Image 1 (spheres, rainbow, N blue to C red):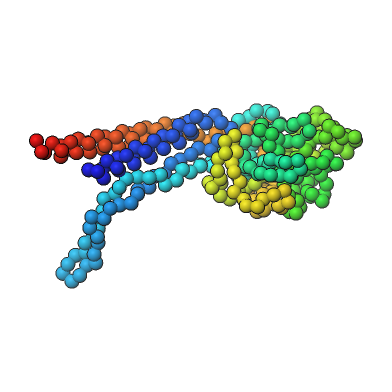
Image 2 (cartoon, rainbow, N blue to C red; image 1 turned 135 degrees about the horizontal axis):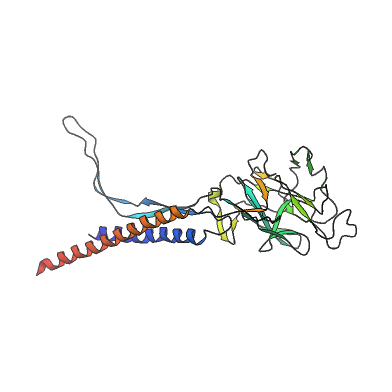
Length: 311
């Protein structure tokens, strides 16, 4: 009966964890690019009442007798299925249609001090002309952070054919679309009047045919091991990454052979939470919690009967 009590308690505790994850999913049903969580259970250690034995001549083998001691959380997974698109008609709302993440960075002066991933493509242009997210983190790709001119063939090639090649020695850098201090707008614009972003990440400003920047996508191969940080950000599990690190496998041009999804300007990815699934999971979780609570109640009644035998 003590075993049944502890098993019931483990069931209550872990069904509460599952309900917490379901509640967070439902709370974020309208969060841009949110990825639903899922709880998987596993049985915990079993107590051996009798061991097994091999069969001998004239004697059948004996199967083990074990009593399970409850349940534990095996994993809390993130489900990285594509969320549905929503059209915003805002050029700087960018959706990744397929695999990959935008890479963002925090800068200290001119040096990158920390990297992040996000699927949330709600971007803005700050007062210095850099492409940033709502928290002020810089969007990375191939650009001209010093505002000295347009991208050229030493950085990207075959643009006219719609197939872009990136010099793999160029590290990711913050993307600048204009320089308010530019002395020659023909070399680099000093303001922003119009903007266009194509599906392969090329950015064109002020109606110019020359590309000002190239937004890149990182098709990280194991997204389930990313860590949520809040603010629609994920921690990048890459050791020793700094502003001199070149592109690694999966970090490259949207829609290229590395499996990166194409970009859709004027749209955002919505949460991939399925409310019908979450409510069904809520029902089964509630019933599992109730059943485990009932086990505790019945075990308590049985202990009471045992104590009352003395009367």
